[in-house]
Length: 440
Image (tube, rainbow, N blue to C red):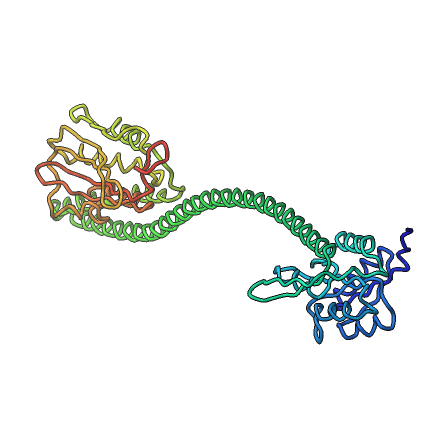
């Protein structure tokens, strides 16, 4: 039997959504079918009575009359019972299939619409169901689903076709789900790799930011101290030169009448000159503090260099700090160790040994410099680090503290007078490490 031309096949689309209806129209007309539209079940029944369609495609969820009721009315009317009805559903529940069979539906089309699936369903209906002869009714069959009874009168072929149709949909959806799962796994692997890369980047960035903040803080602190000290030094030099000038004038006025007093003023002027020279020398050293960024330097090497040209043969150096132990400090850190060695040489008197070692601290590590000299009296422990004390006795310890403070390292003296000096350099976390980059 020759198949009728598609232009002779009229399809009624019953759909309350205009957008969905036009999309279905486009798919069907592209295939060559004639298409008419109805917005609800009542309008579709009227349309069917006036202009009989070859096939009906009906949405299930519609106002006034749903797709099941509409299909039931079409199948109960002898004039329209032979018209194949395809219900459009999302098939979320097995009850959808049972209710479709109960209403007399010939097949299902699943939302969202798939053009290929629509073409396949319509072709199957046209090939399998004679348009002029309805299928012989089967004996009523009762089915209980979700505690509700349904009466099915559909023939075996219709039930088989719908079940195969639903199975085909399930297989296709499962294949799509499997493909989506594989894509999701692939995307998940890419995402995990991206997260790993991001974490590494964040770690690196955080490290860089911490280093930058550390350097910025150190430079800012150094700049503040330098400006303050420059102002203090200028004030001191002016006062010292003024005092020296007065002492020399007094000496000149008394050199004939009271030469002894004149020499006292000369001696005072010489002492002032020494203080002024210390101030000028200190300014030269201090202006370099914090000019360059802090850096990691080997402590063992710094100690060896400090002792090389200063320590006499009578004093033995014990450097217990292993090579590869690095301190994060201002580039002038070498002056700190040089000053500690010089302090033992100048004021240790009976000192025969000077030792450098590492000890655990409450919030980091302590570098200890100790000798067996005369030590420092308790009353002078704080004064030896002051600017005023340094004007007469040298500003080495004051400068040492300033250099260390650039990276929040502190210096104090904790020795026992008569038993030797003991200087403790307290290094906070992340300022002391070994050659592998690990904190000490």
